[in-house]
Amino acid sequence: MALSAPRVAFGVHSCTPYNTSTGEFYGILKVLKGSSLSLSGELQKLMGGASKYPWAVEDGAISAEMSLKFSEYPDFVFTLFLGATPTNNAAETSGNCSSLTNKYGTSCMSATTGVATATVKTADKADLKFGKYVVKAASASTVDVYFSSDCDIGRGTNGVYTTDLLKVVAGLSITTSTAVEITDHGVELTGGSGTISLVTGDTAQFEVRPLNSDSMTVTIGAVADQTFPEFGAIVMAQKRGNQEMLELDAYRCKSAGLPINFEAGAFSEAEAKINLMYDSGRDGVFSVRHVSPT
Image (tube, rainbow, N blue to C red; front, side, top):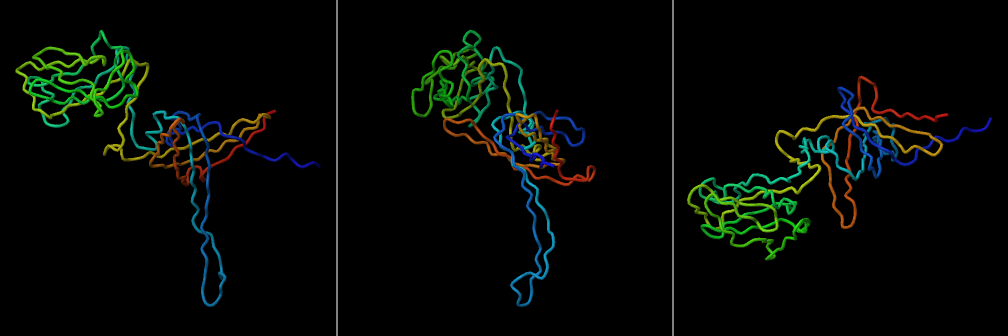
């Protein structure tokens, strides 16, 4: 008889992590750059006497590790690899301006004697730009405003830096219970209800999101989030032209850490290192399935 066609795998299609307790899927990674599974075993050698060769060799521990490269960042990758839970926000048709909070000193943000609030100026919401702002007291009643990056500074009416220290507004007057606009940025600062008495050099900060259809925030490294869940993972090779498919199911996975890279002129790529463990319920570490549909 003729030899059977060799069983091969080509490309990578997806990785689907799942909850090891319920079997529910966390989601799916489709923008994959590659996945590799490495099984490396130790050999214990018995050496002794004048022999340059071992008297006996026995099996040692086997390390099972998976590398997963991908160029997308769904919420679950922050949960599985960094132990954090992202917050998803609904579409913001009026954008978003976070609460003004003091950073240095206590006078800059004050409901009575400083800047009480930073809010979206509805009439100019199209000028909102993505980034962080620092408000610095320049005198007892004026502030300078700084903006973190020019990545989005051209949205709406173009913003302009006035110094290399990223200042966008100088000497903005803060008046009791009165709103004053950060020109061309869609945000207004409202003075406190009492006599304004800023301490020169004090700072406060806030963040802005422009009009959007979706946004996400996540904080990595919080004390409550420093545990990393076990998960299972199904990796699918690309379906071949003859319809053959191959699936690898890793029963128990554990990972901690996720390098996130930014390269000039290239899409970001992350590579997760994953350790595989023995699953007593399924009596194995991983399984492989192959099918040749007719």
